[in-house]
Length: 257
Image (tube, rainbow, N blue to C red; front, side, top):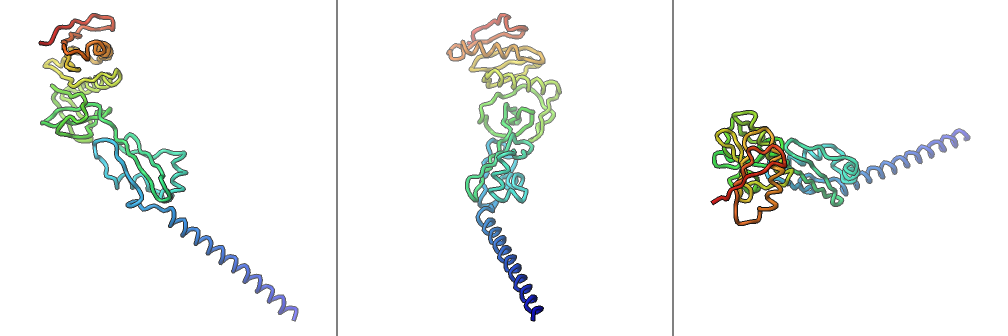
């Protein structure tokens, strides 16, 4: 009899352990199922994508798949924790991507395209380029009111690639001009290259002849001050800055008839 009692006790303990394990397993499975139902996002329904820019290089689906490609990024609590300390990996032609959890099962993605800084008028189309000289978009009109580069001949103007001029050094000159215009907050409607590659700008109806050189930072810095004085006037001027070498040099101006 003592042996039978001992066996019964062992059986009772084993049943209790199995019951505890079963209850624990049920709780774990139930928690997992509840967590999945409450927080797992559906890429099609629960994720919104806003693309800020004009190139349209990537579709919303491509941005979603790139940004939320890991298993833990399918659950909003993990997603929120991850992006609290990390930044989203970007893509070529995008400046940055931000991810924001807006609800238990809702996520907002914002993709910021590299913004154009100028455009080329070619075959009746305005080809917009970014700070790297990459053509990011083509439009029938200059909807961004960016400086238009005219007078140059190009060896390559392909969408999503860097533009190339027939003279390779002139592409560098174009980028220097546009960057300096941005730096000094000078709004130019046109940057024109003449037959000898001399440059002139059209700013608020005024013409600025800059001559031929590799960099135009001194002249454009001076243009900022000139426009502050004459930019709002009805009278327009032709400024001759071809021989300017320092910011203290005189600038000759004539009236535009």
